[in-house]
Length: 109
Image 1: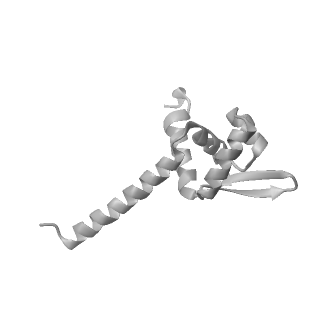
Image 2 (image 1 turned 60 degrees about the horizontal axis):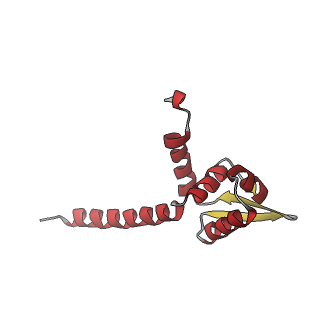
Image 3 (image 1 turned 30 degrees about the vertical axis):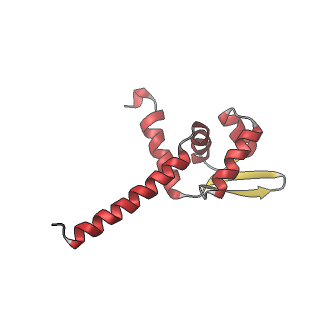
């Protein structure tokens, strides 16, 4: 028979796993990952993101709009320029970890 503490712990773990799965689902597109990887380096304009990701302005804008609505990133306007940055600290930490696991130089291991 499971104790109350164990049952509460399992319920909490289930909620957390659902939260993590939902976040990973939001990130599960190669273009989104490229954009977020670029933004993990710091705030960037749409043009800088397009260049870093080698994607069209319309595609990048669509991804940025959706990620902003999902609360992953935010934007600020400076004159005619719009700058984007990661606002969800979980996403920032996750992008740093993904970089270490998948992108760092093989000689660094």
